[in-house]
Length: 274
Image (cartoon, rainbow, N blue to C red):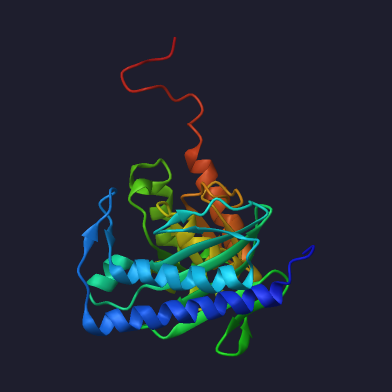
């Protein structure tokens, strides 16, 4: 990857995630006050201090890279290398004392996601991946399942509020009926399960790129396919996810695209053909 040493960058990302984990574990034990941001989402001192700890490690390891973080925004550096950081993804879970939250750190090089670290310090699980280097969990390289048929598929959904207003909502219901089972693991958890073969398809319609950038690399390097719901590669503006085994991603994308097309010969309510 040109002059970028991916091994060094990955080591720094893992070190940064562990530094954030120390902060998060500290506040998990003692509790925190909760504030609301302008978009009505919660934030705590744990979020802010964890991001500062991450930024310190990443900047020292790769000073030429810019950092875009959930709590402190973009530092204005070059776009050649860009760290994407969510120090505490799942703050709502954190403040309600459930362990489904994580630290997400990804690196983008010239618009391509090249490494990701996903660390859930209370849940007790960390995964990481780099371009061409595979996906790793508990010291072993992991892979998505070989599942090809919807009848054998395990599907997980996360944030899908906007999808309920979409023409594709009914098709999702049909796929659920066709599947083996449906779950809603959410957050980092269902992507980790997908990457190590524990389920086969993940669908979300309401995400932020900082939530999923690292997870995209983790799923991709485990042999999965990770796009938005329209089948497009992730960008900084992406807000949805369709991730799965290659066969199920392909099958699901075709069904969602067909559902989104207006019916031939259909007319708006109250109108009739000319």
